[in-house]
Length: 442
Image 1 (tube, rainbow, N blue to C red):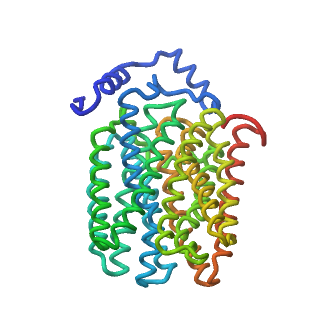
Image 2: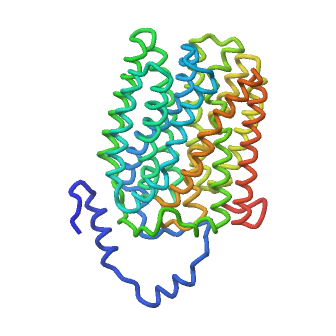
Image 3: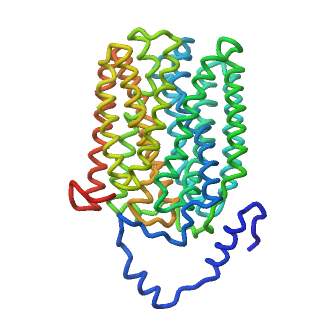
């Protein structure tokens, strides 16, 4: 096997040693005796995990930059939603489909992308994503009709994000074990940074240079982020054999199945508030200028949730921390339509940003925490693909409720209820592992 000259020397050496080794009968017998057991407090790594190192933290940097472009840009959708509504290109519910498409397509190619990663094709995924995402980003500036925006900003941008998202998560996970929640949280902070930068850029450039150059300027930022990712992200472990696109045995582990159901349901309601944040703020007296910045406030405070969630997850377990913060997100979503003062709206936005940020920073840990850590690409891909259903249908359902009721109150009740239901499945997943309602690190 020829080594890649771009790959870190340490990675090549480790792969060679690992491939050349063999198990004796005693080790095989010991391993067979351990099949089916799950240590939720101290997950055992498959190999001598470096817990970071130079290439590990460089991978985190690359993941951070991709998060700025992928989630950061797409999390700025609320500013585009408000702008497109001002243009009156379609009803709010139809416009919301654009945001739902791009967000769901981050997750929908998960099974394909995960299997490609496990088979050793990370660089292929990264190049396809780079070309498709950046081409779509620049083409948004040329869109004039609703269906052009659907194709570029909804489908192409979403697929360009989705083909690399699962591989990005998998690369970072290969360099960390105990410190994995912190590594994921640092990577996810890029979502907050992008969610701050892009709405502010859009708002300030729109009146001075117009829509086309505002979008192109944002696209050039994404070009820089993808370039950094190309030079910093390299898989550490060798490819694994492909047995199929979906492994049904993964779903025989109830803790994993309940967690996947939780994320599907959560995304039916979790991003409803963020989608309509700018529009709803106008109804209580925010100026159009300040309404654009509300999204940046939510994304800025989400960085606090991502980092706090990662630090707390190391001590208490990611599932426990997810239960806590997701419950807060549900309460915020229930309250959101009933807030009538500007100060109260800003405070609620901050709490929502913190709680939703923790969820986004920690949900990728489910496939790693609640099952076998091998085939991380496949398991993560399975979770993401099913989760896409919630991301696809959630905001349009909220938009349809808004169109029918002409009020955000029933929208908040619907979205908050779905988030609470996701917490129930999180608790079920936790119970399968610990066999108790309180106590235990999961």
